[in-house]
Image 1 (cartoon, rainbow, N blue to C red):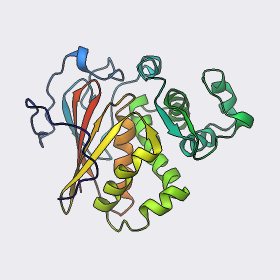
Image 2: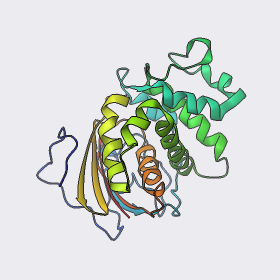
Image 3: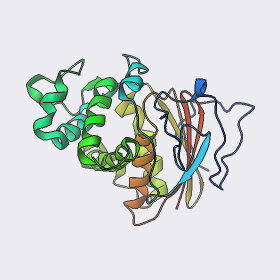
Image 4: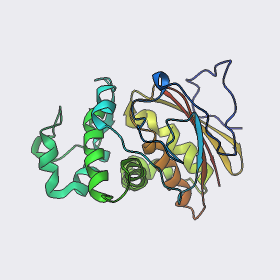
Length: 245
């Protein structure tokens, strides 16, 4: 069993992720800020756990203002991810600039410079709604997140990080291990439980769970495999993903 990072302790009252996909109720007081008010089969944050495959749609819409309000000012991401979103928005990028706390000089983000996660989420929300206007915003977020993995793979850091990953397990381990160099705030740990199963724990999470979910799906599908991901919401800032294929 391999481990990338050990920065999150397991609480005594934690329970394993159910493989059946049955959801359990979780108090709204501990649900992530992105928890939608619309109930449905795969609403996710309104239940402590759910299981999803790429073809299963996520239901519910996200209040991006509530999500952004919960993100500390110290949280940041590399510019490489911002540029991909700006390219998706095209001319509409100018409409979002007024909502950003640190818009890029000259309209171009420097790939390895840090920019506020709050700004990333504003761009992410706008790009997801533009790209997938006929889907719930949660599903749009997830699908756009799959495309973001491509931006990472094409970056200099992505090529260095992923060039030895020959299967989904290795890709998930390497990607999760690189997050410390890409983001400031959240902490991630990955463990390979078997030849076709990886567990990923994210603590200090602020934002939406659809983003890492889509990332992990894309990493597995990039090798021609079909992922099944069990997601457990363990509190307002703690998520666990069990990725199998």
